[in-house]
Length: 323
Image 1 (cartoon, rainbow, N blue to C red):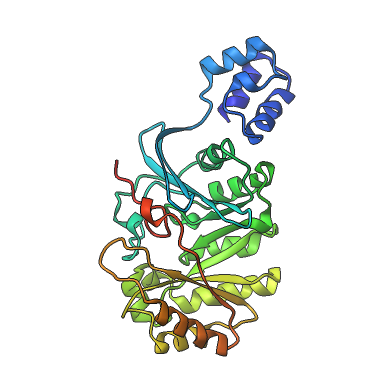
Image 2: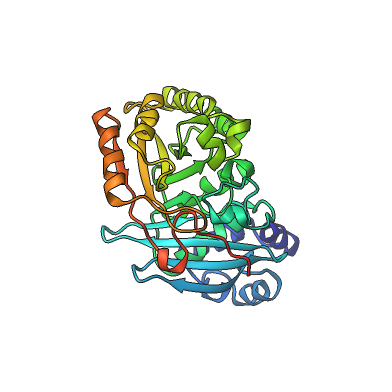
């Protein structure tokens, strides 16, 4: 890290970088607030080392308390991240791993953006630290802009440091659309209890390929097989993400097709009401409930996810800043 090199070149003792990081994870907003550092060092840091790798451009707050921030990286790429506030005390972050996304899922607004680049681990952590400066946080999902497993190393490097901000591994979820090279590495390498979520959105292969072109390269059957290997090795369930699109993937037949490829011992399903981003309409409450009932009769646990921040384009699938 630049900070570590800068401190070392200055001849500062090795513990200085740790002091700066500890203050940062507590939510301070400037070097000046780091009172265990010498005053001259604080002033020099403020002059020489940017406090964040990201510049805050705009911030919006939803009627339900959800907060969305638009950042720019030092080289000008847009990044959005979200803080979701829940009545039970959860303060959950939705973090981005890329600026834009190259995988062009048809229901996701991020896929319509021009793809920028992978984010560094520091840029991912700085999204979390921005909200930590507002209030304590305790959950995180890598479900913002980008496919996390296309940026595997930076995502895992950042996820492993989240406990220092107050977000344990058991409250951290990495969501993939089934990018197999990264998924295989995650299954083989990650022994921390970081949770895994997989976007399915259709169990029928042709339908899934229409919604998610990545299915042509990495078919759902292979993704599900790798998830089962994860369950066998790690003894943890996989979360299935399923966005509900009216007349597209929400029929009883679609629910039965999903139930045929997963089971309740290994998977739990999150049904996601569609947040309008383009060509689709969202399923009705009645259709979502009917779909859920089919899964539950097959002894597959299913919940309907709360929609947060829809009025500020902060809900699932809506992150797509082009500003």
